[in-house]
Amino acid sequence: MLGDASLLFQIAGIGIIVALIHTILKQMGNEEIAKLAALFGFVIVLIFVIDGIADLFQQIKSVFLFQG
Image: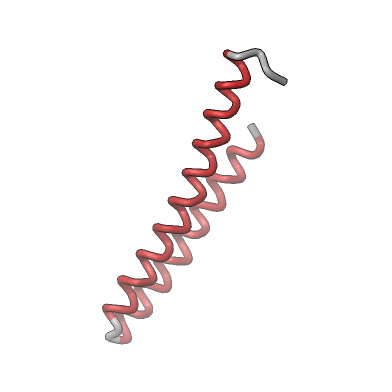
């Protein structure tokens, strides 16, 4: 359970940092780079979520197949 809360805080932290970078770049007039920064942040969070889902499926598989 502690790892799940840690993952949520990591995702929230990445979201806050990406939002700040996006806002700063947009205010400077670099809208294309701001969009790339937001996309990069989204990809990082997506990798975290996919890894978490893979762990969840592994745990479900071990429960139903009675593997250690």
